[in-house]
Length: 395
Length: 78
Image 1 (cartoon, rainbow over the protein chains, first blue to last red):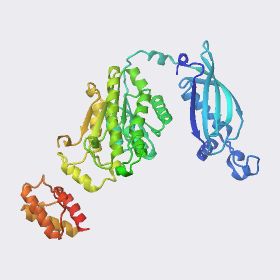
Image 2: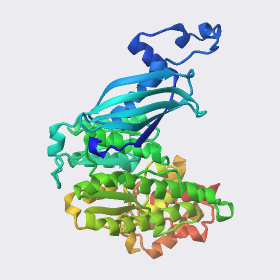
Image 3: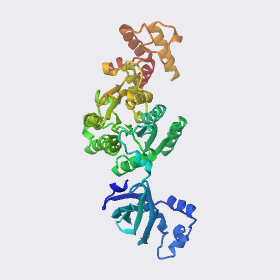
Image 4: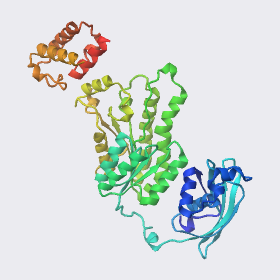
C-alpha cells in the first residue's frame, strides 16, 4: 500500500488458531522453553493451571498484519508498545487488528492501534505501532499505465483436482508462472509445484477454503505478493455430485452447489479484478458441465448451479469486455477424474460408446482448450462456451 | 469370470463370422465390419441362448462393444 493511499481509520485484520506446532516452532526458533509455556505438569502447579502461549508468539502476528496488509510491502516497523492483558492458550483463535490512528506526511509515518482479541472477543494484547512507509523508486516507475506483462501468472483454483492438475502443467508449458490453489491435499499441491518448477517456471501453493471470502482475499493477496500479477484465473474447483431424488432434495443441497459454483466464482473474480483492470487485460475461465445440455436424473442441484454458471460467465463477459477482461466457459463431457469415480462403470462405457469420438474426455483435452483460452490466440473470444465432448453436440 | 469372457468371444466370433483371435476386449461396432443391425439382433439371441438369460429391451441398444456386453451379461446373470 502506498502512503498516499492510506487513510486515518483504515483497518485490517487476520485470524490465526494457535496450535501446539506453533509453540514448538517458536521454542525451536527463539530457544525460550520456559516451563510455563511448554510443561503441562509445571503449569498445573501455577495459578494459570495450563501452559500459557508465549506473549511474543501472538504479538508476532502484528508483524504479519503490518508487513503484509497495512501498510504491507515496504513497511519499516520501528516502534511498538505492548501490554499482555490475558493469557493465550493452545486452541485459541486470535484475531489481530490494525487501525491507522495518525499520519505524518512529512516523514511518511503511520501510527497504528494494534489489538489482539481471542475467540471470546476479549482483548489479550494491546499496543501501538509506528511504521515508516518505504516506496522504492522502482515501484514508482512501474506506475505507468499499460505495463508490459513479462511474466504471465495463472491462478488455478482447485489445482490439485484432475482438470486442475492438467491445467497447471499445460499452462506452465505455455510459459505461465502458476499459483496452485488447494483446499486439503498439500502433498499433491507440492508435487504439482515441483512438476511446474521442472518446466523452469515458478510456482507457489496456497491453501484456502473458497467458500470463505476472507480466505479468498488472503489467497489473492498472497498470490500477488509472490508474483505481483494475476493474468489468468481458471476455476476448476469441484465437489462430489450426490445422486438425490427430487423428493429427497433439500434447499441445502442447492446451496452447497450454488456456493461452490457461483458464490466462490463471484468472490474470486471480485478479488482478482482490480489487478486485471489495472492491466487492462485478463482472462477468467470457468468449467461448466455437459449435464446442462444433456441433463440426467438426480443431479438437479448440480445442474442448476452449473446452469447458473453459464449465466454468470456471460454476464461477467459482457460487462468486463470493454475493460479488456475476457470471461469464458469450458464445458467437458464426462472426464475420468476423482470427481467422477463414483459414476458406475457401465455409464462411463455407454457414454464412451455413444460419443462420436468413442471415448471419455481426458483431463489433457480440457487443459488444451483452457490453454487456448488463456493465450493471446483467443483474445477476440469472450462470453463463449467451448464444449469438449468428442462430438456429442451433434447427437 | 474368465469362462464368461471365452463364451462371449466364442459367440461374437460365430455371429460376426470373424476368427476367434480377432475378438478382443476392445472389439466394438466400430472395429467389426460385419456388425450391422441384423447381426446385432443375432448377437442378442445368441447371447441369451449361450447364457440362458433374457436381455431386457432397454439394454439391447447398449451392447455396443465387448466390455459393455460383458458388463450387461454379468448384470443379467445376477
